[in-house]
Length: 150
Image 1 (tube, rainbow, N blue to C red):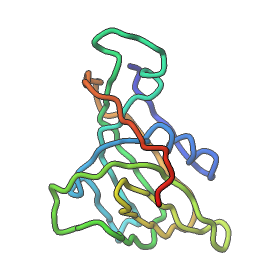
Image 2: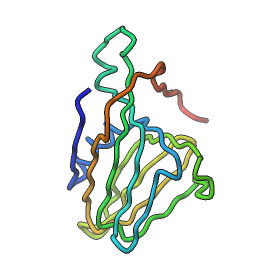
Image 3: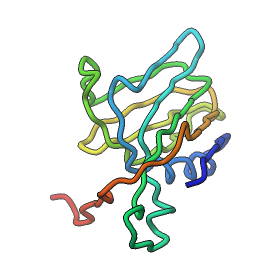
């Protein structure tokens, strides 16, 4: 798998990064807010949906890759429904979205399976995603229950 290096400066760009990071798995301890630098960093094992959708049936059909996300111009970070005292807690990233405020500021929202949310108050959207090393094969493909929750 080719290594990706993406940047987002608006909500459309952020949606592209979100699509590539969907179903990424990370530990709570793999997230860090650096308030003095106005930065928030995340390291995760992303699932390569593009590779999986190519329909290959061999043993390398599913792959993951270690990737870093770097959010700049972050004013504050708030975790909801995430136990920050457990660095070994496992999270599955579902999406990254932007909720505008007084332009260009707003909130970048990272939504996790199970209802956990991370809200980053930002001056503007300035995000980078970079793959950090080679991909590896995995046996499973993430699946989602598309039935309505009652």
